[in-house]
Length: 178
Image 1: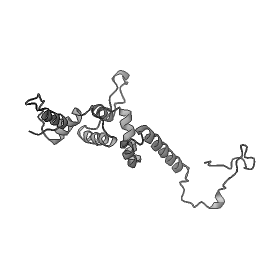
Image 2: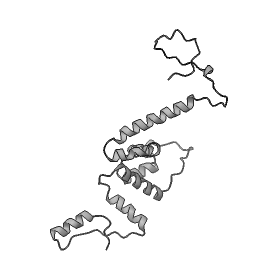
Image 3: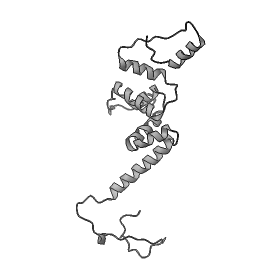
């Protein structure tokens, strides 16, 4: 027989010299179901961010995508439908909001996952930085003119003074302030 989960317990039982012990045998159809059972049986274990993301990705392939919501019915707030992320997060014992943050970090700053795993940074610290960085990128993209005409240095003025009233600047001559 193959031990899928409980290797540490097995080693302790051997060291104690016990002859027999109760076990729970689970028959699975295939490797995917076996991994799914393993994930479920290890819900209580403390896992790294990378392990949680790997489990999420694996379960994401097993759970079908949800269809869109009907718009012709009034929504009953007491029976709000769970999203795919809610369902998977519940299965791996992680709040859905935290999983959302980890997925965002994986997409925008994947190199930071190892810092979270090492305990150097928290998910919330990295998420806050990543979302601010994302917002800054979007703001910068919005501030860049979309036209294909070239902008010359005569088209803008750099104001390098500190003044609360900025009397030197003509009215309606400012398009962007950093």
